[in-house]
Amino acid sequence: MSRVKGDIAIKKNSYKKTNGTSHALVKLMIFDLWFLYKVRQICRLSYQVSRPILRTIYFMAIGAGILFIYTLLNGNINSTTCEKYNKHKESREPNVEILAISDRSKADTILLKEEISKLKMKTFNLDMMMRKMNAELSNIHSPLKKTYLEMADFVSESVGGSVISTPDTESYFESKSTQFYFFGIPIWRPNYFTPRKVIQPWSQAGECWAFRGSHGKIVLELAIFATISHVTMEHIPVSMSLTGKIDSAPKKFIVFGYLRNQYIPIDTFEYNIQGAPTQTFLITKRELSNIPFKTIMLEILSNWGNEKYTCIYRFRIHGKSYE
Image (cartoon, rainbow, N blue to C red):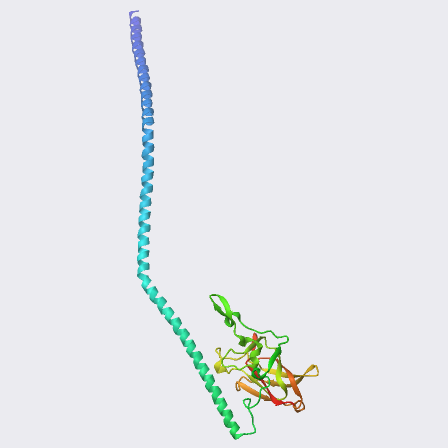
């Protein structure tokens, strides 16, 4: 019995000890919860206090970074600009020298072209002089043979000849080369590109009447009625041409006489570019040699290969006046 009571006492003591330990643990947990709550409040308060400061530091750091990058880039740009300026300054004087040399070479080229043109003109004049001398010498040896210089030109403008019309024929000229400008304003166009140049003297290349294509007509009026025995066609020689060719020269042409309200063919001829610049042709149709004409028509049938235009430097009509 006493043993049973002792066990009960022991159990009660152990229960009391266990109950005391649990109570202590509960108090400890409550303290921990209170401590954590206080720490949370302190952290929240600290965050609310430090948040504006952290935000200010954040924006200051961003601004400092942007300022640093701008300074770095601006320094590179300035250094690059200085280098380019120095290089440009160093290379400026050679460029000026190159431009001066280029301008000098252009001026020399222009002067050279002018000298070449003058030499060609002198060569042509010498050639014409030699041909005239040869013609005079040949006339001395052959007194019966006449040249165009010794025969009257009945269609020359200086003695009263004139141009009536150019039927179905269009004059050809290039606007850039046939007009003279003053500050961009056209002030003068040479008159030697008109059909009148066919019956006028010429002295240099380009003083001719040019018509479009290889076929053209021009009607001429003689100064007086005359019977026709010879015709003369003139063109520049190859040596006087700037391009080294005279493919715009007439090749085959025919001369008509106006009789009884119609044009009748007098004769057909062919100009040879390998021959003399001035070529005189004899009328072979004897039955027409005694018929007087006042109006004639020159029809160019073809040229020597130029598809754009044909040039006539001068055309002459020879014969005898009809009374």
